[in-house]
Structures are given as C-alpha cells and as structure tokens.
Length: 260
Image (cartoon, rainbow, N blue to C red):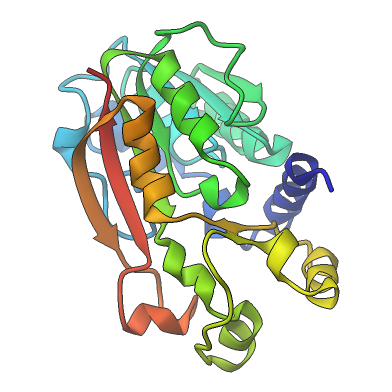
C-alpha cells in the first residue's frame, strides 16, 4: 500500500475530528507572548525544549518545521521573527498553520510533502529544523536525517522528538483495550508487516495512521551517520491514559543535532 498517501489522508481525518492534541492550533495569546519573546514549544508531549537549544535570536533566521503542521510551532517561530517554512504530509495540518497565520497576520510558507524528500529545497537553506514526534509514521528514517543534514547550513541544528522504539514491542490492542502489557513484536516494528490482516483492517476502519517503531540506532545513530553531532538529549513521559507503559519508563526522547 501507499503509506505516504494513506497516512496523509488519515491525518486529514485526525484534523477533522478535532480530538488529536497535535492538530489543535494555538490561540492569540500564545502568539502575543511570542511577539514579546515568551514561548514554550515541545518536541515530545510534556517537557519544553530548553532555551539553549535555540539560536540566541530568531530575528531573520530560516526555520523549517518538518512534519510539524497543526498550527502550533510554525506560527510561534514566525511571531518570534523567523522566516518559517512548514512542510507536512497532511493538507489538513497545513491548513491549521494557514489559519493561525491569516488570523495573526504572520507569513508562513506552506509546503505539502514527504519529510524524506526535501529536494525542493537547496542545500544550506535553513538555520534550524524543528521536527516533533512524527517519524513513527515513516517506514524509513535515514533519508529524513540525510535530507535534514543537507538542507541545514553549517552550525545549524535539527531538533527532533521521537518514540523510544521499545513501545512497539508490546501488543497495541491489548494495551489499548485492556491495559495489558504483553511482549509480542520485534524491532524495527511495522504495522503493515507485523499486524494480522484483521488488525490492519481495524486500523483502517478507525482511520488510524499507520506506525513504525525504529531502534535507537536508527534514531540517534542515524543522525550521527548523516553527519550530525548530538549536542543535546532528554527523555520524556507520555500519560497513563495513552499507554500503561508510562507508569514504568519514559516513552519519548528528544535530541539536538548540530551540523558542524
């Protein structure tokens, strides 16, 4: 199946539902705060990105919000004074960025596309890439790291959030339906390869985006292989409602990777 097309349409439906917190655009008060230099952005569900992971000033820098539509991050960077491009596979998510930009009089360049293919951008086009949790929807992530490295300028940084892959070794349906953690899958993980046909059909009926669990070697090692130097790292929890695993360990991690 065409994963890029399927997940694009699934995320459009997430936007339409208005229930996914990653699709809800920020209010005017958040933009007003950003215009006055006050902001809080997350790569993972809870912990804000440390201020020293960002440039000292946002005025005039070029920022790429990578697979981070939804009217949350791109408008804040624009309000801080950056030149912002947002690329997302979902037209619905991009529409949320457009909605906030028009409401607040901000300029944001909207691009629909796959994060693994940034060929529309010249090498060295950006100073900062902001990439919140989203590569769990990509079958392969090394092309994402390679392309991010290419389009960054020397000294620029890629800020990324992602799942710790071990989340995916457990039976998704028993965890969601019964709160039971039962080891079932191997890593790397793929919904399309490791779910039964019946389970995959359930995912499609419920319009759930299809997910892929990557190893830490693919996540962190992949950034290093692309040429990055890891200059920041933290872990974050999810919520007990989202997964029973949250009671035992952090589910997410974030990295700051710098291009020398």
